[in-house]
Image (cartoon, rainbow, N blue to C red; front, side, top):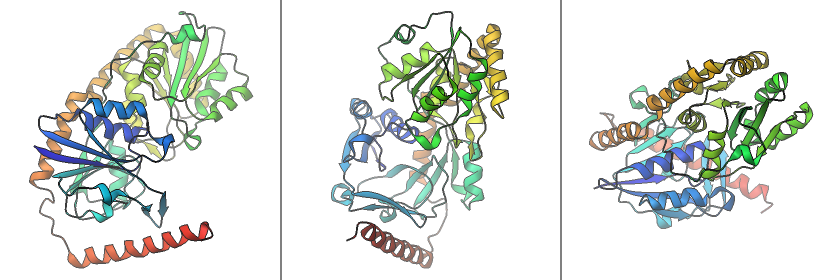
Length: 393
């Protein structure tokens, strides 16, 4: 049996990074893998009961720890007063984590076990010796990481394994009195102000008519404020939720996925789920991340501005045959990029390869190791001093 630890901070949250880790931990075959999943549990807002139950149902052992605060300073991520090493057992063949690329607790202090570091936001590059493979969910991610100094010999391409679980269908259209002949645009996004994009609703305001609706599931409150400013007549909001009954019923109840995100995506679980339900996709580039554009081809439109976005919306309203063609193309893209069996088999192969040959001939430079640890210790001392100063201690 191969023993694997998933180690992350807010790993029971409902964001895309966490969902990647949760799904991977759940779907690794338990006939071959013993899986422990470490996460912080003393922030109720970031612990999803539904995601927790999902992991338990898939025979994943959950191990919790507590942290007073996460401190991101000086290109490192520290955990203040962490209890992690009170519960951690040094017994693993491999560690899997989700990362932005920066050195971070508690992995800074685990140097004897190979690590698979999956990248979901490219803030930097961590050259810790025992990071065996760096998993990239888009070519865009890999290219940015390597330009920042990442070692291309560690780069490995993967994608999200998506598991669409059984769910209890709700009639979302009936809930909002939306007739079957209306065209419904929809967006599902986590409740987070910095990722708000004003493009989808601005475009929709230009083409809204009595036979169209815009339905938002989750998302920043800024969407609701924008809808009010624009005077949208048929904009409806479903509060943020981790209920798959609600999320999947929402996706089943809309006709077109109107995606938008200020900082873009490296790869998007939300888009993948929309493709599973056969939805045409409309999106736009970002000044930051554009990995999501790699999965939009004949299944949708990439629009450079509000005017192009509105034109794409209008085209899909007026041409049902175009909607049908793009819907079929979305399903094909889902199978190509997100099929759970194919992606999990890919991840299993990477795990086995990393255990057999963790460092690919790299030799650890003792002087560099000691210098790196000294620098991190200095940064930790300064970050801790700053933490006490901010509290007047």
